[in-house]
Length: 318
Image (cartoon, rainbow, N blue to C red):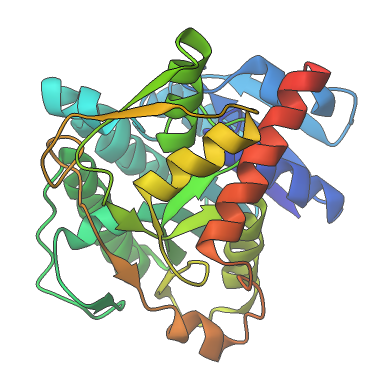
């Protein structure tokens, strides 16, 4: 199988590349390196089945050339703005980097006759709906521009699947954690503690509670959906078991860094920033019914594993 990964040098994209290569696939990673990092894929450069293209995915003409030359069987579309705060400050960010990247990828898939697309979506499309969120929960009312751009992307993907025969898979991610991360609560905590190991500023009141999924477990779910889902368009939640609070993550991070008696300083309020959803819970029974046996690690176990993996990478210099 020949696969294109947009955002392939990023946190999740590079782990997906690892897994696809391990399965014997040929992989092309496309990334503008605004968020992705060359070091994330440095270990793959020796593999003849791997190639990297530095490209702005919004440049449809150039991306189409890549698709026509690559003759891909599937595109895994992960390229997007991952900084919700930046998207709030500049609304054009998510319009261009999250929605327009999708529009460009869809048009290239159509023109280059790529038969299949797997799209990285998010819990942010649900907004602040209460209860356990299922794929049919609604109406969907995102509270961040990131979530709105992802939801708009899902709508375009659905239309392309209907109009042009594209086989499309949408996977809605929870909070994703692990080595090579470039944002998120663990990353932010570690950066703050590097500067001041005696005190940690925590956005909000620390009671924000969500599912946190280890990146390799997420990749397993993505590939499972791609292999087993039937029909022209399908959408699946994926998540670990249980939830973890931000305050719990602070404790796990401090312990993983070998720090004791760290003073927590809360900025206050129920949410960490504008566009943040303080609490949500995924229902992944639809994915389970499809036959997925993964995701047995709990959210808190995932946090502990992620902190350990990140610290090991720091120690080894990877």
